[in-house]
Amino acid sequence: MTPEELSALLDDLIATWENEVAEFKAVGDNFSTSDIGKYFSALSNEANLRGVDRAWLVFGVDNTTRRVVGSEYRRNRERLQGLKNDIANSTEPRASFHEIYELDHADGRVLLFEVPPAPRGIPISWNGHYYARNGESLGPLDLNKLDEIRQQDAGDDWSAAVLPKATLDHLDGDALTAARGAFAARHPNLAPEDIAAWSTETFLERAKLTIDGGVTRAAVLLLGREEAAHLLSPLLAEITWKLTGPEQAYEHLGPPFLLNTTKVYDRIRNVQVRLLQPGTLIQTEIQKYDRQSVLEGIHNCVAHADYRTGSRIVVTEHPDRLVLENAGSFYDGKPEEYVTDTRMPKRYRNPLLVYAMTELNMIDRMGFGIQRINLSQVKRFLPLPDYDLDDASAVKLTIYGAVIDANYTEQLMERSDLPLEDVLALDRVQKKFPISSDAAARLKRAHLVEGRRPHLHVSSVVAAAADTKADYIRTRAQDDAHYAKLVTDYLTKFGEASRQDITHLLWDKLSDALNEKQKRNKVMNLLTKMRKSGQIHNVGTRTKPRWKLT
Image 1 (cartoon, one colour):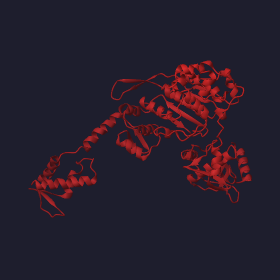
Image 2 (image 1 turned 45 degrees about the vertical axis):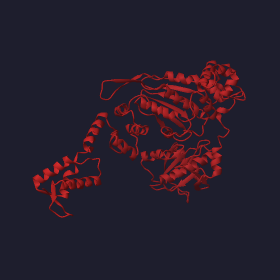
Image 3 (image 1 turned 135 degrees about the horizontal axis):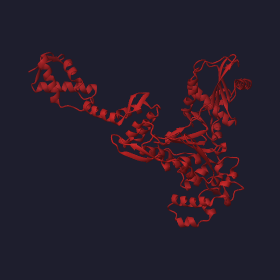
Image 4 (image 1 turned 90 degrees about the vertical axis):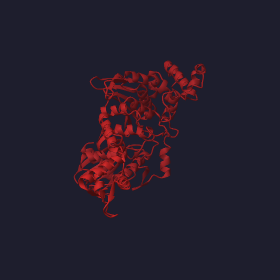
């Protein structure tokens, strides 16, 4: 927006004043991020309920006098924009401000935070709690409003709508044949010859692609002829492959997605990559991308895209990675919950489409796809995939086809038994992302990382091996004769020694595996043993002994 447009917007907001989708604050140089998050949740939910395309949080306007008073909040532009990430990290589903505008008003600096509406059917929470507006007040989202949002998509499955002008003639013959084969693979308990004997109408009903004989949008997406895409107009049913880098190219592919997702994969330049095993001259050859992982990612885009936005699915091929993007927020939970946990999705944006793709063996409905892609990258010694959810209206998945940090790759080759949670933390270190103190301590104990938080880096395999050997020397326990010899040598040279002298003598020689208390007990027990064996005797008192050779 231009300064003039921002000024006009501010005048309009002040004229209509505070309501469920506008909040004014006379903020100085500080304001609680937690409170901003609560207002974000409330304004986003109210924008959804009132059917508006945005809500506003405004800093620098006094909500009593309705006058501009200015705000010094986060003068540094980078810190101000960093608030977007702060909000996204604690909202569910992940969402943040569309934009944060700064207006140099005649009476002071004004900040206008543009809040997007919550997605249909999904209220926005902040730190696990849902908020709403009650007039000008902030409070919990009451049950009536919560139910109103959650019921928005009930019975409103875009993919399940029957297209009145669509007939079986609009479906592709090769796609139908492939669909029967995929259905048979999905249902091994059914005889393939029985499935082949079904009429087209019967098969489509069993595969959940028709409803009472009517051809659904899901059927046209997956099995429709290319020229049948007009039946979905004005919505865009298209996957675009785009090559970027030294060479550039692109291609648009419409229905049938059952076949054309494989054509998209075939466009990708999946060459062999050679990795050198640590400490050897032996090379390991892998494919740049795992076919099943890439198809899993593309199929997830097809299944979970918000087609009502009119946006195509885009697969961008960079020299070292693939970026898969579909419209719509991450619909249920967060990606990381599906990597190591056994979370199963509870709801879907396109239920019929998801069900049909499951019947055609394209995806599963248990949420294992994300974990499979991660495990595939681990087995191939490459960086783990990333999900970019900063734009609340889209999901971007990055699958890497090249090494970022050679030390990370070598560690995976050397330590094939690493638990997935350690690999996840190690992957974040190589990408310069923060990790928890517990994870950092765990990786350090395993000699997988070096440095101090937040400046950690992945250890080389050679350095880690050297550390392990040094640790063995430091932690191995010597026998008592070794320590007794040190004591007698000391007494031979200096005549006598206090308990403190002997403790100081032995302390650094004792195993690092012992804690402080255990080391003190070790010294006391050694002296008692030497006294009883007649090697030394006490010429001092019981509380202040002084030891001499016998």
